[in-house]
Image (cartoon, rainbow, N blue to C red; front, top):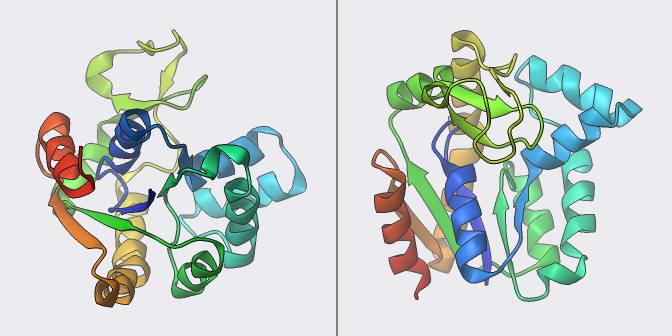
Length: 204
């Protein structure tokens, strides 16, 4: 079961990808997590990624493709995977075609104004990387780490990231449509309602 999940930043795709991974027993592969891990290690590549992310610039294709290609070769991907944050460009999509055949492309549809509100209310655990809302307070319910607001989550950067998403990611939906694998799901609802619709698409 090879799945890609699309959706603008703040659409809840990380949350849904995690739930899909848990239910179907496949790894949730997030390029965002890969980038953050590289930044935490403070390697030359990690520092380059950090600078680009702070400016809201997409990471160059060759870097992202290399990271994903290495990850998909791991043993836990033999039964399938869910990719979150990849592909983001046609070049990445074509590279992915060389690595694996996709069975499902899930598209979370959320209005731009809702997305910006969600991003402004989002908090990330500094310890485990989990995303949640400001309503949870200052402490992560999962690991007890400190919940912080990411430096790249202000209104202007959020709007820029949305524009980048629409300009570069939306054409990918058209790229996959002829294969009859694209399924659009209304993401502007509670998490469990969205997940129920995703299960209908993927099957029990």
